[in-house]
Image (tube, one colour):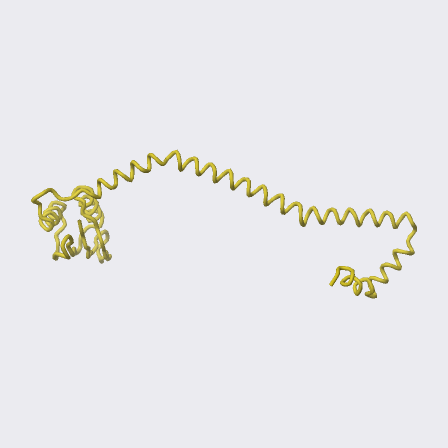
Amino acid sequence: MALSDRLTPLLHHPQVEKLQRRYDQLPQRDQRALQGLSIALAVALVYLLVWLPVSDYRSNAQQSAVAAQQLLGYVQSEEVRARDIAAAGQSQRGRQLEPGSDFLTTVTDSAQQAGLPLARFEPSGNDGMRIRLEQVPFNELSQWLDHLGSQYGIKVDQASIERTNEPGRVGARITLSL
């Protein structure tokens, strides 16, 4: 269906015909003024509804592109540093107990030195151990776990830490592994 076919019913609408009659009765000067205002209104609508949103979108896209370029530059400049840090982390993770050291003995001795009595401990698989601590200071527990990781390469696989009635003290069930 062509555009003219769609507009025909609209042009023959009673309200539109009434407006056309009023327009035809206006003096020539007023008709030209109304035409000029209509053109100005059409231009303003095109500007506000089409041009301005497109322009804003383009501006935002350019700003996003600049920000992405800056981020890419930063990431590329920090790539070497990140690789060095990752390599250092790999060497830390590869750290293990000294030859001849027993995993269970290392953990129990280390806990005793930290003043953390183990309520229960048992082996878990080939390179693991489950431990249970009751009523221990949380800060000392977290420092001890950090020490195990940094000194011996022992990591926490699983932990369940529960608050006790005494402030600052916790009960914990932890699975450690190499």
